[in-house]
Image (cartoon, rainbow, N blue to C red; front, side, top):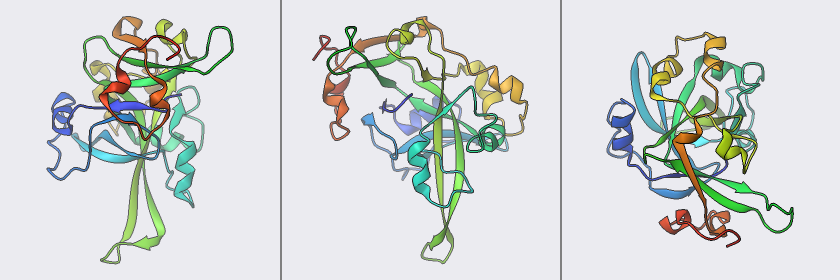
Length: 237
C-alpha cells in the first residue's frame, strides 16, 4: 500500500522533468511533506501526444460511480488485478498517468511483534522524483452544476502498487510501481492498448535506486506537515 508521500518539487519543474507543457500560473498546488488520500495531487497525463500536469483527487472515482466517496477505498490499485477488476480495467486500458513523488512513507512492524509501527521514509538515492504508475478517471456529478449550469467534473487518480524490491520487502509486502524514463512514452500513450506489454512494466524498481530511514511518528497525524517529518530518527521515536 502507498498511503502517504511527499510532494516538494514545484509543478513547473516537474513539467520540465516529465516533458509536459508548462502548467498554468494559477495551478493550485502547495509543497507538502504529508500528502494523504482524498487530497489534490499533481498528475502527469497525455492527450494527442501532448503531456500536461494538473491536480487530481487522490482516490479513483470510476465514471459509473453513484457517489464520489467510493474513491476513499481506491487510493491504490494492485498491479496483479487491474486488467480484470471493473473499477480499474477501463482506466488501465485507456487512462494511465504518472504521479510524481519526492518520497513516500511506509510503516514497519516491530521485529518482536509488539509496540507501534515505525514510519520509514523512502526516497531516490539521486534526489530525483519518483514516477509512480497511476490510473485516472473523469467523473461527472449528476446532481451538481457550476455557475453556468454545466455539469461538475471530478478528475481522480490511483497509485498502482506491486511486489516490493529487496529493500522495501524488509518493511512491507507492497510498494508503488516506479516507472523508469524509458517507459514513460509507452505508459502515457492512450493509443497503446497492449495489455500484456503494459503489465510487463509493473515490476519492482531496483533496490539500488532507493534509500530509506526511520522517521518520527509525527507523520502519523496528517495535520503535521513540515520538513522535520523526513529527518532521520532513532528507531522507536
